[in-house]
Length: 183
Ligand SMILES: Cc1cc2nc3c(=O)[nH]c(=O)nc-3n(C[C@H](O)[C@H](O)[C@H](O)COP(=O)(O)O)c2cc1C
Image (cartoon, rainbow, N blue to C red; front, side, top):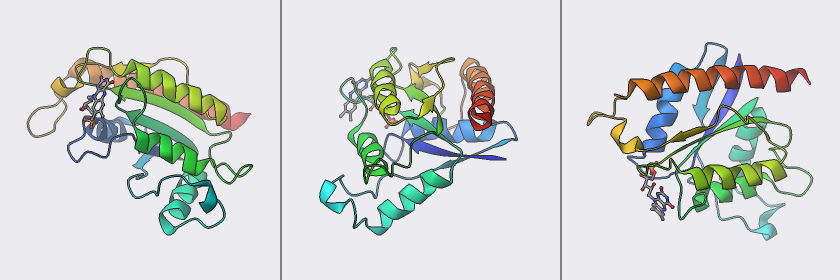
């Protein structure tokens, strides 16, 4: 069983991306255990805190370290990634030389009510992940546009084509994690 830390880029209670993360966890193949690793309590990254991390930072870094892989599910804010997500990347990258990200298998899902599916956030996230040495799945990429229409009022996924896409994506990610683990 491979543990996958799921990092949701939105802190919003009714977040579409959080719902998508939940669906991905349900649809995941039996070899993968997907669990959300929360980022909302992390302090703003301050280099002065490198060697005096608070409890939330210690727990977050340990959560990433313990995971075999990381899956990012994020909206787009102003054509880039939301600041809490960038903050989590930065917090996990410190102190220098002790980043918890290096060598992890990774994948990105982005979603937006806009038809562009948070393309800008997806691409900006990949730029940081490359710098952090996260081995990020290139294809299939996953931009979910008009994602507000994917769920009914009870929060259930009603878009069957997206469900199928998510299954295919998860199987590719499963293969990718095995490939990275074998290296
Ligand atoms: C600060 C801010 C900036 C936003 N900028 C974008 C944007 O650049 N592109 C986009 O598609 N949606 C943008 N949105 C709208 C979000 O896609 C929308 O609120 C979405 O529901 C957020 O994802 P969530 O439901 O997972 O919280 C923005 C929302 C906020 C709050």
